[in-house]
Image 1: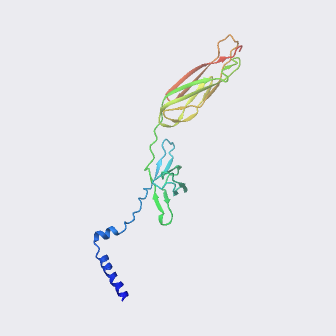
Image 2 (image 1 turned 90 degrees about the horizontal axis):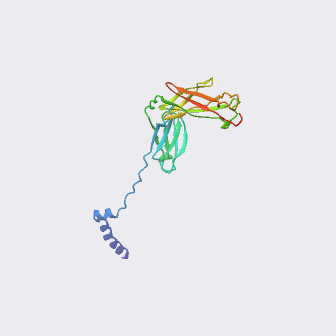
Image 3 (image 1 turned 180 degrees about the vertical axis):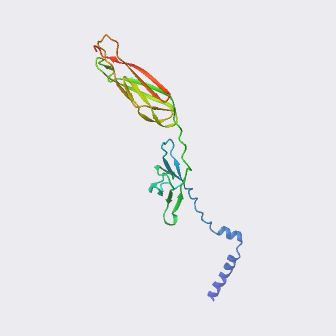
Length: 230
């Protein structure tokens, strides 16, 4: 008898649960879990600025901070993203790259886009030549003996590339080249021997040097500082 009484008490509760209004059921149901948004991983092969010949950098962004990135392509290597989820690998070979992040079910592959073509090099145009100075070591020398005089120069212009130039002076000539980067680039030194003077009461020796490239040129006359009695 008591058993039947218990069943009778449970029956209204079951009916009530079935008859619960939809709004109450919705409030009672737990909210679904929504995964957090995944970072927008991206990778691009870009031309490194200011390089001639052209060099390429692989720029990876949008990964998790500190995540290990496995790179495959013309070169294979692994790098850890920084705290902001990015990393740049400089001076890589040109070609198609893929970045793999995560492991197992969370593994993710990101293809790297690349610049369609490197920028056209800017042709060099030298607009000015300048001999910036000359010196001896020490500053005051024995003028009765030939002395080394060192000249320095620079070129001004636009563009980037190899420039052939010409030094001359005191019967010596030199025709080197340099890699010019606008707006100006120094030359290599030019060293010549000074003439001598026969007596201390004669004028101090002078040295003349000339610097040129294309249609621009400069000339400088340097007067030695003679040590007393020479």
